[in-house]
Amino acid sequence: MLFFTLSTVLVAFAEVKFAEQSSQPGQSFQPKQSSQPRSATHATHAAPPAEERVDINAATLEELMKVPGMTRTWAARIIRFRPYRVKNDLLDRGVLSGPVYDRIKDYVIAHRTKQ
Image (cartoon, rainbow, N blue to C red; front, side, top):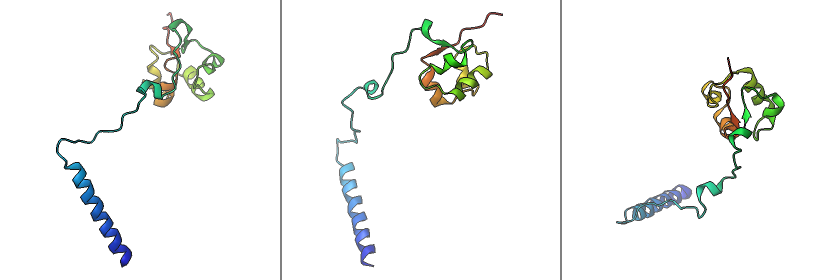
């Protein structure tokens, strides 16, 4: 019974303190800003120029495996569901998941095949 009473008092006290803080005029909640720019907080690799990207319509399994973040399973799926008009087809057609596509999108390109 004593535990229940103490916990009720603590909850009530916390609610009063929260109400006091949120009702102060002229002040609104501001999330803490990082001192580093957002792009600097994530490890990024410089994307290669277009002529050095791996062509998802012509690359072999070994060439696809050189793409950072690529696994053998994902590379095999890319080969299996060819051809692609644009690299975004990998995502639109369900060949790759969103996180995998986000990892490799800067390293691949889809050259159109000649017919």
